[in-house]
Image (cartoon, rainbow, N blue to C red; front, side):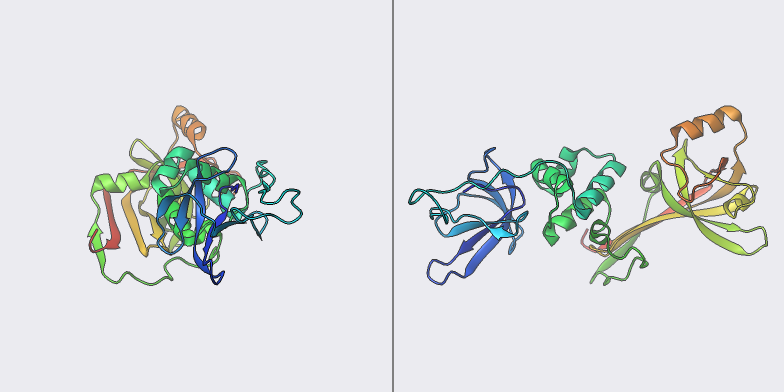
Length: 307
């Protein structure tokens, strides 16, 4: 019996052939794929060390076909009782959509593969497999990965892109608590996408998303003169960033309020441009830097009441 990461181990009843238990192989102990295996069982979501018996066989995910039953003779085998070894998996990186999204979110979070695997309680080898090969991880695996990466299962699956967040069920016993200023600063982090509320040039209120950075406690963003975000200059504005975890029905939001000014010092502008993590997503010439120095910083988080 030789397994690959992501294969399914199936335990059948010797009498009826019905599946008694199955799980996903998330860890190998030998390079050639021979037992034992770390298996995450589908019925309990727990990982145990397994030495497969004669009632076990493999289902290879990458081929969608059952593997060789332990102790049985494969078809067309030249010797009675011999066990054929499946061809080694193609390790050339060819990730599926989930693997690509996991890798992107991991790099965005600045996490190593090992740290992400530790947070998600899985083998680093299995996480590497997910990022490099087409795979269909279990819902439990996706939930842990989403939690480790600060995103959602829907986002990793690519679903709900055109739907507003928060359509899932509310927690049975939610707790809404205020965040400390330091917690708010930590959640703002160094960069991302937030929303700025400004009185636009025509006098009407407007809320628009912007790519932002945090530099020396100031929120800075690039825009173009005459744009809606540029109307913030010289006014007191509100800036908001949030995160909604659809899988866990939890979330947080941070609100910063303060005066906005245009950054004019050439050295400062040069430094901001050089250290910017990304260019504005809308594209175009947006070389006007605006800085918001929060006079107040507040936030709230929704969690289960027992956390």
